[in-house]
Image (cartoon, rainbow, N blue to C red):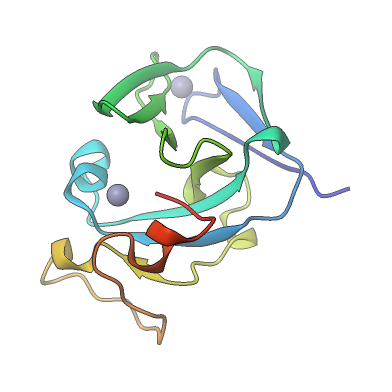
Length: 140
Ligand SMILES: [Zn+2]
Ligand SMILES: [Zn+2]
């Protein structure tokens, strides 16, 4: 069975997924940038039924009326994005997994907010906003 574990910096909050990702990518949006202090967030999206918290209780911040960002209230690590627009899915920050190598990004989204000095050496598709995700089964 597919199983991948992850968690926050201090280890209090832990989670698990038991399915391969539906999609993955880099998000360059300003909210991800402000939430992490990093130029980009790599994410992978999973079916909500294949996700569980295995330790601790996350805090929840509503970054918009329909979007929740979940984090450890002890160390502050931001790990999870959920949107009411995609209720069957959960998006996990890839580097929060114990093995971030398991879910390489497949695309860039919200590239209109890409930081000018931040470059990645890849040929992945670049999308403004959610790109094709906004009409598909996928993510944020
Ligand atoms: Zn923590
Ligand atoms: Zn974002």
